[in-house]
Length: 261
Image (cartoon, rainbow, N blue to C red; front, side, top):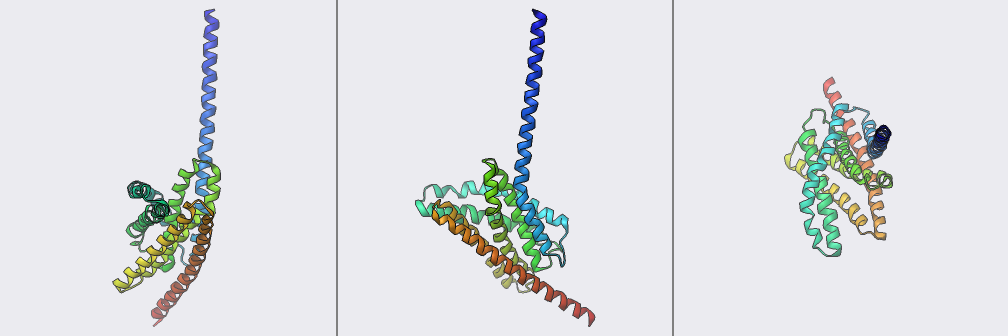
């Protein structure tokens, strides 16, 4: 009897070990799917922005750092939002929604992205064109969107599919437009005009992000307004990208003509 009990005990232990290994494998597979699903939309858009600046491509290393800075920017953003979002709980109806959309979400998130862009990227000597502002700003926003996707994706894979076509391109458009104005500001010799350009960029990003979230947070048919905001912002960004390339091309031609003189 003792031998039989020992055999049963070891058999049960082996079975438990195999079960634990199987659960571990399943868990790791789910995590891998979550990470890939969260990262894929950002990766695709980063590649598209990188290719859009093919006239004078940016260093891959600095592109990667921009994405990383955007990912890390979610840490202070979450901490600040926990405090800034408190008034929304006492404000009635639409006021509470507006506070959450424009202050808790848009102001804080675009604010930390603006900080990381100016503090860590704008000073680089590689940031020497208007188009660079769009590319680097968009990459920071896509790192931010990737981190958000990881958090939202834990609630279900369908959310990642929805965000891939909505929130992720919204982040890229809003912050990319801000980057256009920061790119213009960097080439501006007049400090006051540079400040005005940066202010325009930040306010544009705030308006796009805030309006998108406001319509979405209403939880009604007004949520369709978020789609309109997204489409308009994408169109504006594409127009700004064309203008940035024209400005950069004209500047390059001017430098070449000055060199020949």
